[in-house]
Length: 222
Ligand SMILES: Nc1ncnc2c1ncn2[C@@H]1O[C@H](COP(=O)(O)OP(=O)(O)OP(=O)(O)O)[C@@H](O)[C@H]1O
Ligand SMILES: [Mg+2]
Image (tube, rainbow, N blue to C red):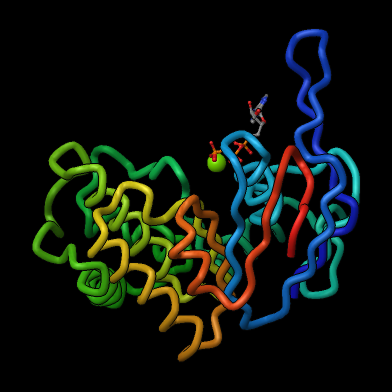
């Protein structure tokens, strides 16, 4: 469903060009459960942002379900992102004025879903991440791990066909981290959702059918 070929990404910092991705090629089939590991700064989040079409590569080709992403209009990209991709960010990006319940529902509003259905879905997914008792709290009334779980519920509530999770268990204790990982595994095996997880945790990588290792802007092991 996803095919990256020789993806490069260069950031300009003042007069200097820094190449962060140095020719990444990666194919992912529908229904895969894949982890991406690698040292801090090696380009994992940059790669994930490109896969999620939040950022554009400097060069290379990026096919999503057979279509070249650089040929899609901004509207098409927004629509694909909202309907098909569930993004769990490394920084959670919850909206500070909204409660947990409302944060989870935001992407669903953009789909034109009925209010009652949005409430039902939002509660359903808050339950799945163990956060329904905090449905009416705002982010500043939640711990980091709790905010992370609300962000995960938000990514899942839209029933995306692909989940991109950037260190989804980074702020969680061992048991909650295990539960969340199990949730991803279940969604992958029961609903065939493609899952790509960036992680520093070898135990999480072990639970994925496929593990990719990055180093200094390239994939060194797949
Ligand atoms: N917008 C940007 N402008 C300039 N440089 C950037 C930008 N975003 C990322 N970088 C640089 O790109 C490199 C890769 O960053 P990236 O966030 O992809 O790393 P990462 O592998 O996700 O690391 P971590 O495990 O710490 O999250 C870093 O050296 C970073 O400084
Ligand atoms: Mg990162």
